Image 1 (cartoon, rainbow, N blue to C red):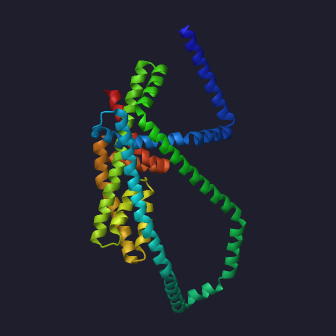
Image 2 (cartoon, one colour):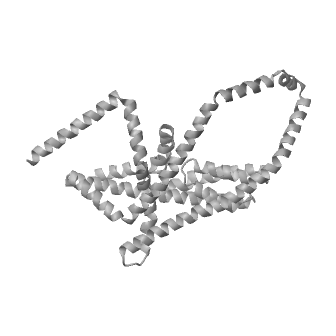
Length: 362
């Protein structure tokens, strides 16, 4: 009876697989739309698991340090302390950034008219000294160019409006998903042992003991490597912030402490974080001195070079047991072929593959 039930289950799985495959082949656009809808529905859950995984590193630390006998109370305190620390970092960053940006915009708004007049004077002097270039510019019909530009803008205004609405909608969805993800992550962290037990029971029910043990080994390696990767990302952000602070203090760059904190916090956002931090830093420094703004760009480049080429490869090699040169080569290849996501995930994935290879040999 059991064998016949197993055969029925296998046949049903094959039929289901065949139907899904046919649907993908013959109705590809509809299939992709269905996947898009499903992903949108479950995205808060995905965000929840990712946030829970990241926060769990701090929660585990507090679980070990707190001397509270009641496990539920200990877990609740650990989760609250984790959320308080992260909230403190976010609030302090906003308090540091927003007032200084407002002050900088105010200074720039006062300086821009004089700056434009200076540019106009330099431009007129240049034309008066270069008669040939002046004649070429005079031949160009600026009125026609302006009217053509305005026509293009008017013709594409509806498209631009639609794009703006689409961007706003995507940002709103992202914020809502993150908010729901945080709530889901808190619920997961408070009951993580129960969640883990339920998942294990489900897997045990549908897999043989041998396959279950293999899956458990793979999941443990994956968890360990991704936890180390997150810790290293935080360490990387702190290191680049400290290097930037030291160089800025030496060269007497204004807002050194505030900008270095901004760099540390935003570098946690892979790839684009440092770029955003550099733009914010330039906005703050530019009203004080153009030369110091250029020096600041140089400082960010130098700090990033030192951190990327000397410090991080050593840490990666030590924690992931993969040679630094291989990490560097794989990072370049992944970045070229798979973009930002490839650049972010290549190191932990490479480490997991390397560990599984060693496990298989042993």
